[in-house]
Amino acid sequence: MICASCSASMDAPDDTCPFCGYSALLLDRYRLLFILSDDGDSGTLFRALDTEGERAVVVRELPLNALDSDAQVEACEAAYASLHGVSIPGLAFWRDRKTVGRRRNRILYAVQDHVQGQPLSKKLSGGLQLSDALVVLDEILAVLEVMHEHTPPLVHRDLKPGNILRTPDGAITLVDAGGARDVVLGTRCEKGGLPNAGLWLAPEQREGEGGPATDIYAAGLLLLSMLTGEGAQAFTEPTGEVKPEVMERVHPDIAPLLQRMLRSQPAARPQGVAGLRAQLQEILAQVQAEELPTLEQPGMPAPAEAASAASLPEVSSKSPPVPRSTATPKVAAASAAAVTVTAGAAAVGGPIAAGLVGVLSGVGALVYARSVRTAPADIPWAQLSDPNTAETSELFLEALMVLEGAYPAPPPALLRIRDYVSARDYGALRMDIPRLRNQLHKHHRSQDSDIPPAVKASLQRLHVLSQRAST
Image 1: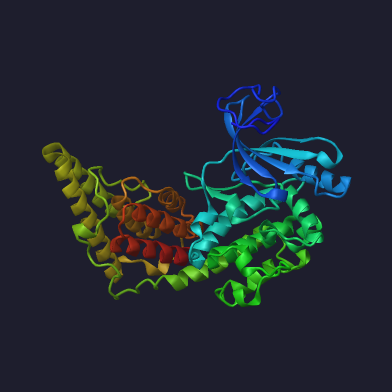
Image 2 (image 1 turned 90 degrees about the vertical axis):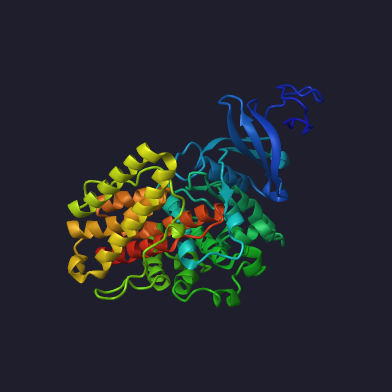
């Protein structure tokens, strides 16, 4: 523990420091546990404990002695004041703030709830595929959209990979919002110094200004970082401009929009996060269509051959899931039969027999799905343009049966896709398929295995069917 009065290291938690005799608690409330980072002019970040609520928090200590005027100090305080107490899903909650000291010795303390998660900066080695990067960016923009639509608009002002966390439940959370640091870093820029943290700043932030368009610029830098696997120092000039040769490495489908996001004049960037998200989602749909082969037409061979037991992922004695009431009698009957046989095997032969039947039922589902795909008379291709048909729902449910049979503990995206099928919301389903693919890749990497061909074929089928049904 660290004494908030004299900075001495204390062996045991105590409200009074044994060295200086003063209160060891910051603002008589927060117990400083250890230093997370010390960025010099950008301040010190502490992991701490809120003694009033016994909750984990993060405290930013920001010296204001680099600022030249009271107006700049007020700008710092206003940046955090705008976010204090505001609760937005996906945004870490700012719990407290206070400025102490006078004149040249003033220090701003801002207290934020601690968020458990892995920073995006840990996932960028080698870069991401364009489709994966666009999915992550859309999650970030979804939070920014709510912030910008707040009254008054809230601006993050400090978007960078280290401030974007993927929590254990798979959600994206933005931390360290408020951006009072950009006022400090802007002052450093005026005096001729530009620390690495300043390379993530939009041009207007280097003059101590910022608005919603500032976050658009930062989102462009984030996308560039995700695509290249590099930090801002690798693709940004000392002046803050993006190096021209870096843009040549960007996929041509996204390059024009990315260039607009990174324009130096805020008014020249895309105006409004909602419109930007719509453009990015159109590009994502195009990229996904390029990454996946086209679904076979009637009479053409199916992309997936009947699977053997070795090609299926982990098999559990748990019965395969029964489709919801949206399934047609043909699909429901096939699934119900598998459940009956598996339950009987568990009663007679125990887990081993149930596991064997689980494999056979999974193969049966694949063979059934293949027979449907290769029989032109059974596939209502002409009706795919109408999502409000039982035949369309049946096609989706056949692919879902394979995925749900392969993963007894389904990932969150698979559960959402099942709900989308029930609601016949195929546009939302199409946007969630890359998330499902990422979750399955993560699962199989942890198991040191590959995604089975049958699962890949079902993902492909879901994607192209959703494209057909939502256009």
